[in-house]
Length: 129
View: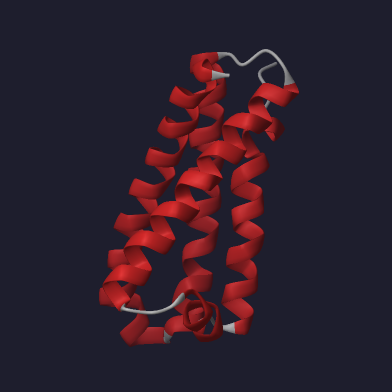
């Protein structure tokens, strides 16, 4: 189990780093042009590619043998992502958890929640051939 923490942490770091960089670009340039909902929706396909590439690289690099191991990597990475999001975003924005969910756009927020699920299962889906 401990051997799965390293690939899970690395998967989290790759996706979180790309998401952070894209988030800065989204907030500074896209939101003023198209609004928050559309900016978030435009970012999602890029993040899907990042998630797929990162998961594929992790699976190829660390060669988790079983589907259960690949799923553990994804779920651990999701736990790290949610911890970082709730700690950093809520701390910086000064929101409670309830306020955070209440302020999410119903459309882009729903897509975001689906993407979290995709993030968790992607190492399972990109099994090494």
